[in-house]
Amino acid sequence: MAAFKELVFSGVQPTGNLHLGNYLGAIRRFVEMQARDAQCLYCVVDLHAITVWQDPDALRGQIREVTAAFLAAGIDPKRSIVFNQSQVPQHAELAWIFNCVARLGWLNRMTQFKEKAGKDRENASIGLYDYPVLMAADILAYRATHVPVGEDQKQHLELTRDIAQKFNTDFAAAIAAQGHEGGFFPITEPLIGGPAARVMSLRDGTKKMSKSDPSDNSRINLTDDADAIAQKIRRAKTDPEPLPSELPGLKERPEADNLVGIYAALAGRSREDVLREFGGAQFSTFKPALADLAVSSLAPIAAEMRRLSADPGHIEAVLADGAERAEAIAQETLDAVKDIVGFVRRRRA
Ligand code: TYM
Image 1 (tube, helix red, strand yellow):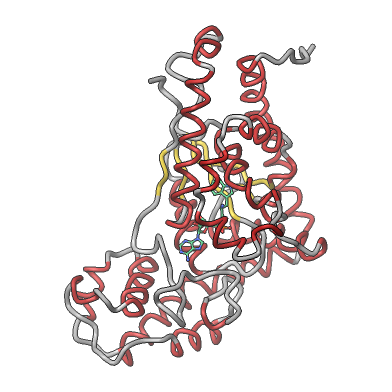
Image 2 (spheres, helix red, strand yellow; image 1 turned 180 degrees about the vertical axis):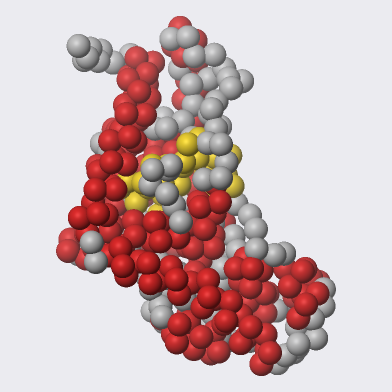
């Protein structure tokens, strides 16, 4: 296998209502990845957003808002590359080539398409069906080796690996002839883990916390103020039992498990460790402690997002700089891919 340079890529859709699940499952971990000695690229995936209808003015605002959330959470745009997908045309270009590598049967198995399209499948956009192929192009345009995401993206990342593998196999001779040893695309590692890989709804511990849940009380939004955060935690569904002292005691108690997981992730501790402290406590003790922790972690991010959002010019300058740096890497990949596939490409002077 070729030795690929460690490179981290991940994306977030600008579809409104960034919530605690997006933060703990993804954005906060993006910040942690910056400490590694690797280039990180963090992308606002606006091409993915339009796979379902978006109001154009709202979309523009949401692209800036996700960018502001990245920066407010601690992503440093000098160190990492922060950009929006539509400014780097190589993503869509590579997606087309991957459309000719991926198989219909693979996409037919994607559970997220089935959930999102629902019963009215015939009326879903072709973009929604093709969504995971574009995701593979996002990642592989940079030949990314590591992708931090929440658990709901696991199947999409498996598809990315299948596409990379099939491309490497289908074009093995051309890849070797171009001097790339051991395959052109890396087999990307998903980084899914920690106590918040799947944050659940505050109203129903068996449902994922989601942007599209009609109940605003089901999620903590990154833009919520301290009062809203505390109130949503106070009202979160629980059961009447006190917290157990050990992990097996959380089995069959999805709401308790979720709140303990959120506490653990916010505090940078394990669930076991949190139970050692709160085992035997009632929710009337645990919830205020969780609310304090959530407010002290999230309120500064919301305040910084508000401050950054007051200066759209700055946000757009960050995106333009990021796009330029991203494009330089993606273009190199595309040039090589075109040579491998057998296109006659324009030679740059
Ligand atoms: P999106 O915008 O739906 O979600 C962004 C990130 O948040 C994670 N996430 C959660 N994590 C834990 N608990 C939850 N309840 C929760 N809800 C969302 C998601 O797993 C994700 O990491 N398809 C991606 C965007 C994308 C992408 C990519 C990601 C496009 N191209 C390339 C990685 C690499 C998505 O829908 O994200």
